[in-house]
Image (cartoon, rainbow, N blue to C red; front, side):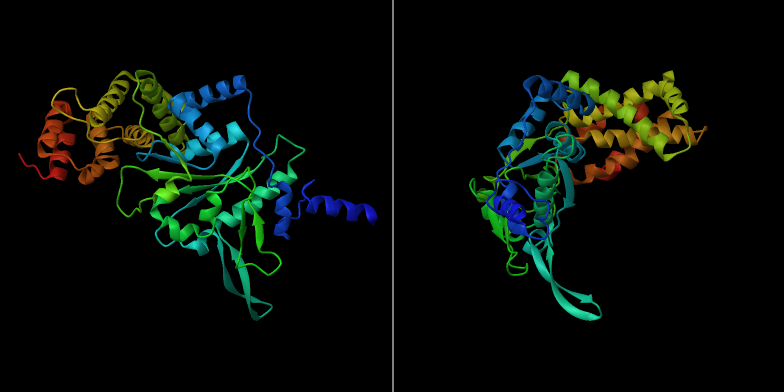
Amino acid sequence: MPEQVFLDQLEKEGFCSTTDIENDYSMSLTVQNDRLSLLSKDDLKKRVEEISENFAVATESIYSIYYGLIMGNIILEGPPGTGKTTLAKVISEELFNVRLVESTANIEWTVYDLVGRKTLEIVDGKEQIVPENGHITKTIIECCQQISSHEENQLEPQAEWLLIDEINRCKIDRAFGEFFTVLGSASNQSIVLSHQYKGNQKLYVPKKFRIIGTMNSVDKSYVNSFSQAFARRFHFVTIDIPKTEETLAREKLITLNTAVKEISSLTSFNRQIIDTKSTEVEVSTALDKIDSIIHLLRFGDGDDCPAILSVGTAQIIDIKKAFLLKLLLDDETEILSAIVWAISTKLLAQLDSTIISEDAQLAFINAIPRELKGIKEDVQRIWGFHE
C-alpha cells in the first residue's frame, strides 16, 4: 500500500508519531521534540494556590518546583515527612498533566537497575538470554507511548516521568551509567541500550521526559553525596517544615482533618463520631498541647531552648491519629496519658539520633510543661539523664 509506505516514511523522519515504539525504539525519534504544554498565568496561579492550601507549603516553593521542571530534572530535599513525594505527584498531575512512576533507590543499585541488563529466562522449556530494561529505560519508553497515544487528547496524561525516592541512597555515578551524559545534554538526547537486541538499541529521550528525585536532608546515615557534575544536572528545591504563621495555621487544620480521615478509613468508626470527639473541649485543648510540643521541638522557646528537631507534617498527622485512636478505643484512657503515649511512640525515638549539646538537651527538658511529665521522663531516658 503506497499510502502506508508514505506514512511510515513520514514517521521515520519525525513528522508524525507512532504507537509502536515499544517494539521499535528508533520510533522514539518521532516524539522526541514534543514540548511541555504550559498553563496560562491565571490558571497556574489558581492551581498553585490550591496546592499550597492543601499541603501547607509556601507558594514560592511550588513555583520553584514548577520552573525547575520546565528547565529539566529536579531534586526535592528536606526533612522527612514534609510531603516531598506527594507534592511531586500532585504537581506533576495538576500542573503538567503527567503521570509519575515511583521507585525507591537503594545502595545496591547499579546501571543494570536503571538502564538495563541481559537476563536468563526459561522460554518453552529452554534457557534464553533476554534483555530486561531498567527503571529509567522503561519509563522513557512509556513516556514516548504516552506522548504518541495522547497527542490528540489533551485530557489524557501527556507524558510519564520517573520519581526516585531517596535518590542519594544509591551510588549515583555507578547507577546512572550512560544516562549520566544524557542528563547534561540539551540537544538530540539519545542512549544506546547495549543490553537490547541488535537493531533495537537506540532510544531517543523525549524533551518532555523528566526525573524527579527526593532526598532526606536530615538523616545522613547510609547516603551518598552528589558529585558536582551530577548536581549540575538537577534543579534543587528545598521543601522545609512550615514556618510562617499562615502556613502553620493551615498545617494545624490539615493534620487534624487528615488524621480524622485516615482513622475513618482504617476503622469502623463513623466520620461524624471522630469529628465530634476531636471537637470536645478537653480533646481540642489536648490537640493544642500536641501542637505546642511540636512547636517547641521545631523552633525552641525563644529563650534558652533551641530548635531540636524538624518535625514533618506527616509525623504530626501520625501523632494526632494515634492520640485520637487511643481515646476512641479506650474510654478509660486519661487525656494527658494519651498525649504522652502518642508523642512517645510516634516521635521521641528520633531524638536519639539528634546531635545537640547537653545544655540544649537540658533546656528542652526544662521547657516541657509540668503536666506532660511522662514526655519529660521519656526524653530524659533517651538522652541518658536521670533525676
